[in-house]
Length: 135
Image (cartoon, rainbow, N blue to C red; front, side, top):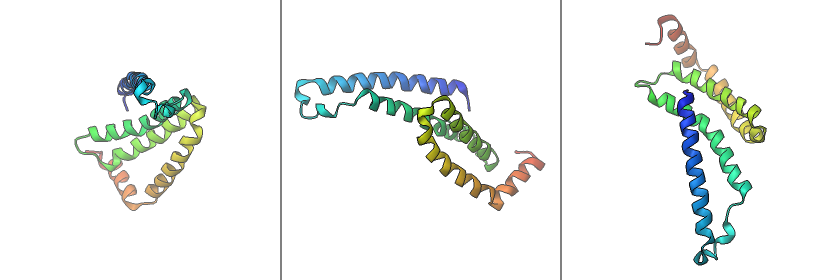
């Protein structure tokens, strides 16, 4: 997973976020929108959206990495899945407020990982990749 694409995704989101926040706030403050102006998002609600972006950026980068391969293989998908879990765990250290949301996702990811680990196909493919090389 490339740091460059992550930084550009984050920069792109930040510029879109800033633009959308201002545009939506402006729209809701116009006189003809008084009937819905009570739905204007608070700063903390906008922050929740920014936090969700941080969380969802990780699986997005994994999906982009796997999609970029001309022929995705199980042997490369599993390490990407492990990187995804590690990246989420790192986010909880870096952004403690994300811990509760990420924990729910990590529990699901761990259950899938355990299921994968107990599947014969996983073991066979990983052995094939190790012995023959992942060609």
